Amino acid sequence: MRKDQNYIKLSNTKMLLDIIKDSRPISRADIAKVAGMSPTSITRMVSFLQQIGLVCETDIYSTGIGRRAVMLNIVADSAFTVGVHIDSTFIELCIINFEYTCIAMQKLPLTQPSYSAQDIALLAYEMYDSILSKKKINRTRILGIGIGVAGTVQYQTGLVSLSPQLLWNNVDIAKIFKEVFHLPVLVENDVKASIVGEKYIHKITDSTDTALLLIGSGVGVAATTGGYLIRGRQNTAGEIGHIVSSPNGILCDCGRIGCLQTYMAEKFLINRAQVFDSTVMTLYDIQSAFDKHTDWAVELMNICLDHFYLALDILTNLYNPAVIIIGGAVTTVFKKPISLAAERFIHTGFKPLISSSTVFIAEAGSCGCVQGSAILAFQKYIYNLLEQSDF
Image (cartoon, rainbow, N blue to C red; front, side):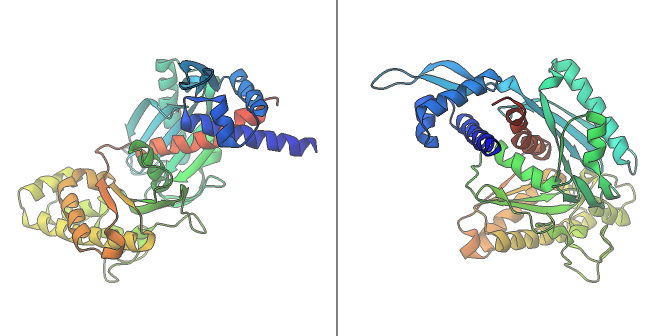
C-alpha cells in the first residue's frame, strides 16, 4: 500500500510540476483548478517542490476580485541537462536549464574518416568540462545527457544498432558515455531529436502535428502527432532516405542500390560532383559552381531537387502534417533552390493533403538536434529529483 501511495504522490507531483512549467506564473488556486485536486494537496506538493529548489514564489500577484494570490514559477537554474549531437563530421554539445534556455554551446569538427564511440565520448567530455568551468555551473545540478546520433537507435537501451555515417554497428553508446560522464544517458536518433528541438525553437505546440525533413549526411524524416514522436516498431519510422528510388543507381551506405539519399545527401552530392570536377571538396564548392551556372552543377542540383520533391511527396502522403520543417546541411547551403522547389510542391502537391499545411525552412545553423537531445533528457531526468527525494 505504501508503494502505491508513493507512486500516486509522485505522479501527482510530476503533473503539478508540468502545470507550473507550462502555465507560469500561476497561482496555487489555478493549479488546483487545472489539476482537479484539493487546495490542501496542492499546497503540500508546492512546498515540497520549493524545498528541493525546483519552484519558487514570484513578486507577481494575481489580479482581479478578492484576495491577491502569490504566483509560482520554476527556478530556471535549479537543474541542467547536456545535449550532444554526433554526426560524421562534427560533435556539437550544449547545456540547457529548466527553461530549456541554452546556457552554452560548442561545435567540434571531426577531421578523421572515422572515430570510435570511446573517442567521441572523450572529446565530448572535454567540451563539457570546458563549458562547466567557464560558466561556473554546479556539476551536482546536471541531471543527465541526451545524445542524438545519426543511424538506427534503440532508444530504450541506448544501443546504436547501425550508423552507416559513423561506421558503427551495435555500439552501446549509452554505456560508453555513462562510464565517461558518470551521468544518466538517453540516446535518440538524430532526426527524431531534431524535431523536438525545432518545435521548441519555432514555438510549435505539442498538439500541432509536425514533420521534419532533414537533408544532411543522410536523409530522414521525423514526425509527431498529438505531441508524441511516431517511432515505428524499431524506432526506424521515417527512414525515407533508404527508399529505393532508382534500382540502377549507385551503392548506398546501407548496402542497397539507388536509395533516395544517394541523390541528396552531402557525401553523395560531393562524390557525384567530383566525377566532373576533382577539386570539389565541400557543398559550398558545388554551390559556387551552381551559382555560375556550370552545366554539371545545374544538372546535379536538378536531380537533387527532383528527389527532394519526391521526399516531400512521400512525407506528406504518409503523415499529413499541419507543419513541415525542412532542415539539414544541404538545405542550409542550397536554401534558395530548395525553397523554390518547396513552393512548387505547395502549388502542385496532392491538394487534399498539402493545402492546409505550412512549409518552412529551418534557420541556417539550426541547433535543433543538440537542443532536442537536451530537452528529451530533461523531460526524462527531471523526475529523478522527485523520485530520489523524501515524500
